[in-house]
Every structure is written in structure tokens, then in C-alpha cells.
Amino acid sequence: MTEKPIPPRPGRGAAKARLAEMLRVDHAGELAAVHIYRGQQAVLGAAPGKEHIVGQLAEMEGQEAVHLARFDSLLSSHQVRPTLMAPLWRLAGFALGAGTALLGEKAAHACTVAVESVIEKHYAAQIAEISSSDPDLAAELSQFRDEELSHKDHAMAEGATSTPGYPLLAAVIKAGCLTAIKISEKL
Image 1 (cartoon, rainbow, N blue to C red):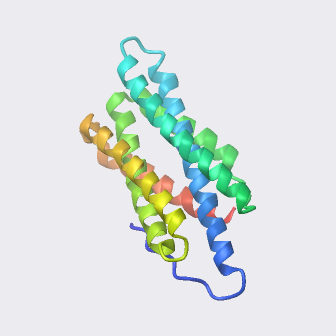
Image 2: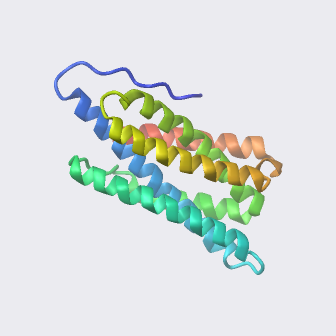
């Protein structure tokens, strides 16, 4: 299931409403990503000999935190409220991170691959949608997408797809991400 650019809506205020949806869902996604990495670090950080992966997770969380801060700023400057689901997305992100980390390092990486696969397509659709109307925001989203892709590439290199049950785990995580995107756009 790939996301396609949403065609422009007719009517007064439609472009502003669509931008609000985009910013709200992107903010929610970065918020969840920060908490996924925190959940993974909470589990793996308590295990001996996991300093290497915990350091990697902390670095990726740091990049997600920069993205989140930028979306905080964009929400404020465009007077867009964050999703009403933010408390649930924090909890769900942490639980997803902790749960996959409990399954092992490769499962934690599998989570990253699944999430970033959805986000890559999501950002690409948004970039295509706004590239002519807001090239500055499109450029920022392109940078964020590239950083998300580096997370995915790293997780692939760490053996994410060799996780037992990877296809099922990835499908469930991707479905959850797609559902969260649709809900966050509206709520």
C-alpha cells in the first residue's frame, strides 16, 4: 500500500487545511519515533553488553528529536494543533520499541525498517504534493526523508530481515503506522 499525493482540494481554506493535516501527522510520526527509540533503549540499555546498539539507538533518537522540534515550531508558526492522539502515540511508540527490543536486537532493527519504509513513502508523497507550492518545506521534508532512509539502511545492514517472523512483524508494524497516519491527519 503506497501513499499517493492527495489532489488539491477545492474551496476557500482548503490548502491551509491540508497543510495542517500534513504538519499534524508529521509531528505525530516524529513524536512516536522518539518514543520507539526510547522504549528500545530502556530494554536494551538494561541488558549487559548492549552498549553498541544502545548508542546507535540514542543517535537515531537524537535525529528524530531534531525533526520533532522542527515540527513543534511549524505547528506553532502555522497555528496548527497537534493530534489529539499524541498521548496514545507516545505510549504506543514506547510499547512498540520496548516490545520489539524484548524480542532482540534484530527485532528492534526490524521495527525500524518497517516504520521507515512507511515514512519514506509518506514523505515522498508529501514532497511531490507541495514541491511547487512550498519548495522550502518540501526541501526540509526531503532532508528528513533522507535521514529516515539512513536509519532504514542501517537497520537492514544490522540484519533486520533475519528476524524470525520478519514478514509478519513488518506487516503488523506497517499497518499500524498507516492507521496512525490516517487518524492523526484528522484528529
